[in-house]
Length: 367
Image (cartoon, rainbow, N blue to C red; front, side, top):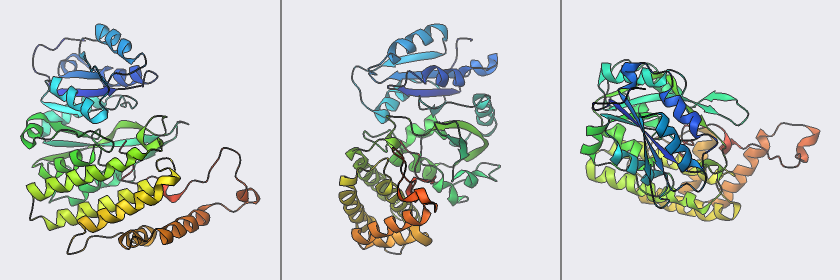
């Protein structure tokens, strides 16, 4: 690996916490296979977020062997968003890419990203990804088709469907000066991607798409937000408050944007409240009640694009703050989806039926 003697084109920022099993696979997938020219254009800034396992030692050992890797060590655990901020502050690249340390990149991804950055010079480069389960099964994300057919730099007004692409940080490569001019940083708490990712797409004058899978997103890992029942899922409300506060300040007249973001928020909150892997049963009712309050707080005066079918009915029940009807619909929908069999009345020990809320959805990947 050639040590950079000039400003790199790309900084890959990797927050690290309790991932010693996956860490080297992640780092190797970023730096492996680069030619000398590409290697000179890449730095990795790994942030040890006071990880209690061996991650700190592994990072220092890795940086000794790979000079393109630098380690930032935080004295206290601050969480994913603030650890990303620390990596951003230490980075020097003209573009930044936030990669989670339990995920990894397919071979050739970094070189393909560099090639597109050099050619298009975008504010934001959107990437496709695959969802990878513990058993190795891979599937495209439900929002992946929205990336098709973007063969030049566009604005969101030209391709408004791009707002519905996964609202994560790791599927976006962002020009550093654009990010600095926006003054965007990550907020503390879970669902930190919400008030970060949407403003990027709304404000960008040059959005381009690399229509290839450049990221493997690992699902179901113990400790991941989407696999952890916790009251911290209530953080989503604060993150949406921050998003709508930003929108009202930066784009106060954009009623269509407000309506589109409102619809995305409602769908997302319904995914969270309905997912047993995230929402403890005892917290489902209070979360639903808070989501109904959020609905009334931000409901657009001119309406919004409500989905059809069962999802649209859930929107209506949330608008009416009708938790009892919501639970009845949820139960009925689960029973309807359960395959008919003699064994279906008594699930095997340790197994639960998979609900509609646990199916792939464009809004569920944020950790």
